[in-house]
Length: 501
Image (cartoon, rainbow, N blue to C red; front, side):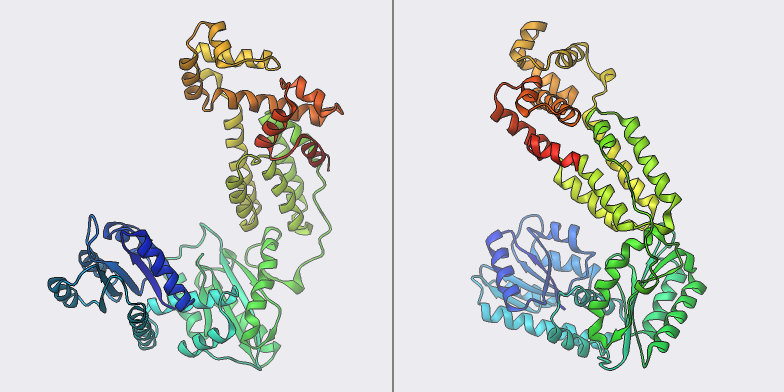
């Protein structure tokens, strides 16, 4: 697969190149774009790259200067140079530093694609000749990883198999092993780790490093006994070189042929959360997963109330109780149910921040140990209370008075103008001071306070929504609904139903 960078200060040129190239060959990976040579070097010179297509004249650093600097980092990279006009000196300099072609704008699409095809053939020939060169393995592993994730079709994959001289093994028994070093426990630059990779690459054609630098090994044997013998050998090699207790081992069910590997990988993904209830060093496989006899049975009403009322200590107590109960039943628990409960808690604390919620869910799904899960939850809890519970000690006396007034009179109509008149301060200055010290606009703070009150009443009473709106300081029901949904993501009735489920 060809990895390519596009460098041009004209956005339309870059967009056009991307469209033409990706339509021509979906297997070409465009690793990024840059507006000039300085940006290209800063962001991409450490990324493996086979081809750079660059404009000649750009601000800060021109295309030929970029090529000269780039070759100091990646001398094997090929270059195509673009220019709006023919200049002999540029052509001569370009040829001297080894460009593949010099193309004039507007581009001749046929000439561009023919040049890319020729470069692709050169790169593939270089990889075949390189054998065990690091760049060869980077691209080979990338192709394997994309295939396991169903991002390469079978016919394209067969071409890759031929390129990398890998066996199809149609009739052999096959299985996939995923070896995940514990983060912080294995130094991937140590001699033992490097030696382990070399050993496994030599013994197993389908060994690869994924983007997280975890090992995946495709096992192939005449029968199931041969597969079992191979996993034993892998286990012993890891034990000798880095220690099995430093890794999690996930093994798929046994299938037939290398075409089975993507399906095997999907099965391994289903086993990931079993790490939470397994000891490092043990082999996790579908046929060895124990029946789950313990499931979390916690009422979230208590937690929801603590969050609404900004009771940090009660929230932490709930979390500690949850993890204490879980760890007491760790090896008989259902990790999927544990993740479900914690994901719902994360949702409560991220209702107005979808990006934060998505990040938290990814961290929860990717956690390998109870400690990682708890750390993720604490990273949500502390900022949640920091955002929503102001520290009055750091605020000026006038802002403390304003916030006390809001607490006592939030059901009444108020604005910066009325508060300025009451406390003898310019309304504009008051607004600026409030935003600086509290961290939000006055109107946002007041609405957030009122909505929090409404949430508490919704959870603790059966009052109708209209009464709760008035009790929370809203006389306009439509405005109340808009503000409530803005800060919670739900209508009042939807919020009440969600929390009662």
